[in-house]
Length: 387
Image (cartoon, rainbow, N blue to C red; front, side, top):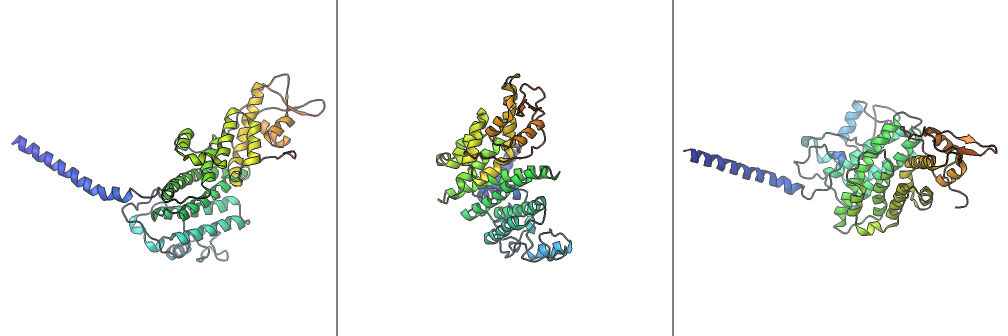
């Protein structure tokens, strides 16, 4: 009797295991070939439905427009004639929604890729033309609306070159914002937190874009901007004040296709990282001035004073106490105005002095040096006339 009972239990557990496998198999099959999960949509509960095909013709569904008009939930960029209770299909842009349940999702609420492209083009034009509002306000609006675009690409499982180009444009927005928000640090207390969140989304967008590159590459679709966008991930490692990025850079390099390593954009990124690590600051700034693309320069400009602060530390620690270092020579090496370099020295708690002929000097072996904890004011590259 005991053996029969034990056999019955074993049989039931075996059948339960088989039933569980049968129940899980459709889920595994359905998600095996899904596109990368963008973080903008990671919290959405849509995994139990077939991929949607959006049919909304407007930048914002009519139902959401009406609701937000009623609740006066309209951004300053969406108001018709400045009225917080009125908008139009030409102004309203769908907001990002963190929690979406399966019952809430209808194809009429989702924008197809053509409308997503049109929406992003509208946001790009707004970024270029809107000068009547502080950049932090404009950034907050576009930041939210581009997350909604990424979310709907994921919902519809869109994997194509056109989708990759949308990701590239969103990344461009985050890079431009990265530079502009850094310049706002001294003007707005909120800019520092906005910069951190912007960098966080930039890194997540890059990961999603690289997954997209891998998927469309299997269909022999290649973006002409691929090398430059791969270089951005390496360049972010110039700073020590960015969100955690996962795997080490050396491991990431090994996963790149060999032709990417040979491109001028990736060679540039690896060269300046190497010069920074070796302390070859003259070659670092010359290479940046000569070889950086516009977007690469936008991305690394807020990191340049971090590199300069390290150069000042080397000079202070390795120089002779009785031989102060001329600021003019150091400013030429670091491609920065002499008065801006003096301000940076003060931020590092180092004193400067004047000699009898009026030449400004940096005395070495000062024990008061410290790396500034707060974000440094950013200074660009000063190009000498003889370059």
